[in-house]
Amino acid sequence: MISVQEAKERLFKAVKELPAENVLIAEASGRVLCKDIFAKIDMPPFSQSAVDGFVIIADDHSELGKSVIHVEGEIKAGDAPLRHVKKNSAYRIYTGAPIPRGALGVIMQEKAEHFENDIKVPNSQDYLNLNIRKQASHFSKKERLLLKGTKLNVAAIGLLASQGYNKVKVFKQPVVSILVTGNELVSPGKKLNPGKIYQSNSFTINAALCDNGFKTFKSLTVGDNLVITQKKIQLLLNQSDVLIITGGISVGKYDLVQKALNNLGVQELFYKVNQKPGKPIFAGKRNSKIIFALPGNPAAVIVCFYQFVLPALMKMAGLDQTKNRVSMLPLKQPFLVKGDRDVFVRSSINNGEVVINSSQDSDNLFSFADSSALVYLPARSSAYRAGELVETHFLWEN
Image (cartoon, rainbow, N blue to C red):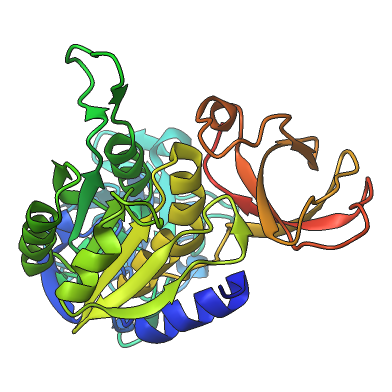
């Protein structure tokens, strides 16, 4: 049995980022850039009007005085820039339209003294350089816009489109499959006979995957039969980058998963971790495929998923595994770790303090319903004090 820290070190040493692929930006939301992105064009690409109004053309304001000048025409958004304009004149202009050379500024329509085809130039020079978005005022061509490792959000997708990118190079998403084991399991919605329980682990894992931007490729169940278990593991490994198995990984007569994995040539990274819940967790590798075998207890499944599976998936997808997920927060109440195993305790956050839930049984999903965090407490002889800072892992938003 190894420590939590050593287990994570072995796992993350074995897990590699997946290769890159080009995807349409319409399908790139939530994906991770595998290289920096640079501007293809200035932004704005040309000087443009910020408002509807009148653009004043002259070499100098003093040439205009309080004169009334003629409105020579109009410039709309989408028009090509005017090559030839008349000095000491005005043009009706609309938001987003290109600013002609020699423009002093744009007078907003609501503030203009406009008489049919003429406009009175104000004595004040407040309009000079006003209401003009200068070319490259946001950024210039070839400027770095997005860094490798950026998770593409709504704004980033819009930025890429505004630069003419229709495709972008991102890390591949890991293909994830689930195998749930056990003779006692029945799918929700079916009749529950004596001695049976409803199967929840695949639904829990699938929801956790979706909540974090990943998808389940295939989910299967299998009874306690070595030959069939081995066949289903082989099938899913052929189709997946990551396989998550639940149940059948302890040392009982019908715990067949580890034997099946050994028969299939899966290299063990670790088996059994000095933690509670989730001691009998297995992680292994076959070629580039990563295999997790988690305990069958539902709460242990959640702990192991967020501590080992999710960080591995994030690394494969090019994501920062700890960003915004771990913080040091004060305990609301004292807590004593019983025994010599490190514990992950279900907790909630109240006014910036960690409140530990009363129930911590590994088979109790109900206690997770009121939780938003796992607190990692290494085993020690003395109790953790109220107010002591503890390592807090955020799970989801309540």
